[in-house]
Image 1 (tube, one colour):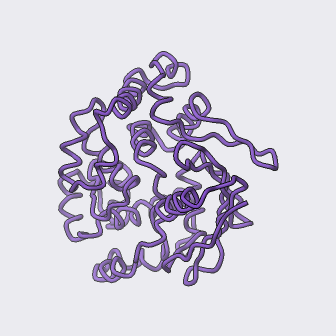
Image 2 (image 1 turned 90 degrees about the vertical axis):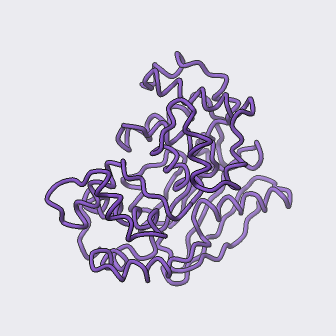
Length: 309
């Protein structure tokens, strides 16, 4: 058994994370809310391992204790901990964001109601892009169902010592070996199946170098990825937000963001993309995070949360 305790920069709300998972299901996670625990498969190199994450402390003194029954080398332990730190945004300082949002009378209440909310990022950029393509023009529960079907088809199956079953997200090599006809019975559209497999093959044959994205500016990433089939501006924006954790993206074409801005700003109708970009200018340099808080306002309505929750 291996593991450690990760100190998290406060504030961090595990309860808010759990609430968000209610409306943004992740088929790779097994959540034990009462135990304040998440179990998940992580890749260490090419090897999948199951780890349990236990959230301790409170919003102002948070920590994550992780453990795994897998035998890890020192370098593997460092790699797994780095992935956890990345996914759970543990080093993000929210106070500059809150100072910025408090200057806006409309946004100020969100800083208190959703205090400690931060991004739950994808574990790696291949997974993030595939999940984003899956999520194009479908609702969140159906996207989660399609993701689970892909995991069951092409990912590795693991069991922990309690007999619980997990599926690791498939590697680029595993997805590249698929044909669209294998995804069609799983309710993937023909184009979505082609886009996912084409992307995986581009990664495998070296036409796309995902590691190089970390060294690029935002506009360079757009220029690098949008020539690929099925990958437009919204898809790349989501990759940079949910895969890379970049703080100043504004996915103005996102339907959920349109609904959120209408709700938060009490607009008579849904704003168009131009209006969203106009409103979002004042959110810079935290447009990704303000978008997250606006999305969460919609999620809270869907979950029928009390306004004071």
